[in-house]
Length: 451
Image (tube, rainbow, N blue to C red; front, top):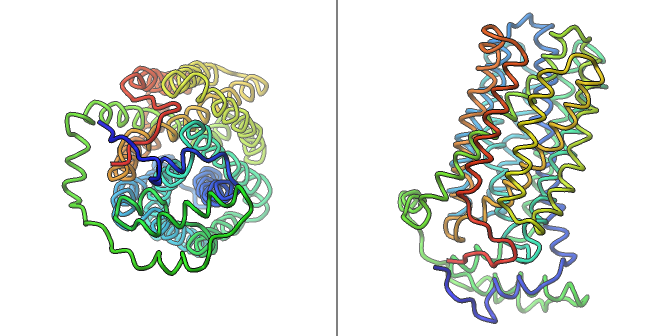
């Protein structure tokens, strides 16, 4: 049971606020990190298509480049959540940006497959940690009545990053034999942005209060409150905030066991299943789409252009999901978008002409990325503050197992069957996720559990 909130506690005060300028800064600052993450994930789909031709790599080797990054993401997601619950959301968020930014930039200098695989694993560590931490961070600042919508808007930055990746894929990667190196070099931007996150964004007030650092939490909330009225917090409050003792340290093993306590067991298993199925179909499809188009007879440039057009449909997908999630609720919105993804996957797999491919691909982008927005909104709401990042991180980590497997399964399915069969498989996974959605909690308009 959630304890009754006090009128003066951090959670109640945050939930009373409108969408303040300070919340806008938190959303935009986190969203830019999210977009840079998406840019890196998206770039690899264009880069492996170019490397396949330049390094004469087979489908299995290209699948390995994708999968090793997801191995890192699985480890990173699991560790990132644990670290964020222990050391704070902002600290871990900034660290993840630094890790994957440096490793991506270093990838521009590789001369062979082995070193690229090592660096892609390190990139995955940072990427995997960043996403669940960022969604937890934003959800803890957003007022209850608009929390789902705010987190979906955060996830919408993914489309911005993926569009940036598609633009780089179209104009930079094919521009010269070293175009893929310049693409990796651009992927080093998050390392610089990490400094802005570390010093420009506040720590989660809910997390600070859960650690017993009440004065710091109070200061941050008052900064949000006075931003509505255009005033500033006295400097003396900042001094007082540094004198609060830290709260008790949690046992990491205990937090993991708590995910399967009777209260959370059903939610955890349902959330893990949804994450696994959505990751399998999303990464199986979108990482391979440029390469599959090339194999279908389209030029590298033309396949990249098709992918760019399909990516544009992600933005309206997020916009519709952001509206519906506070109208229909979490479960209905997520399941409807997953069913739409299943139908779109079948249509894409059976499309034969360029127009059909583009339309079906746009539908797949629209529904699948809308589903991602809803999933990232519901995940942090599933657990109390003391478990929120851990629970979200481990769900993402389980999902990354599927993203490891999917790029490796694609060549095998194509060898055994065909593209239509492959996308039917993706549709089945989307359908399973839609069913599992109904085991999740739905906190539309309700306060977060601040235990």
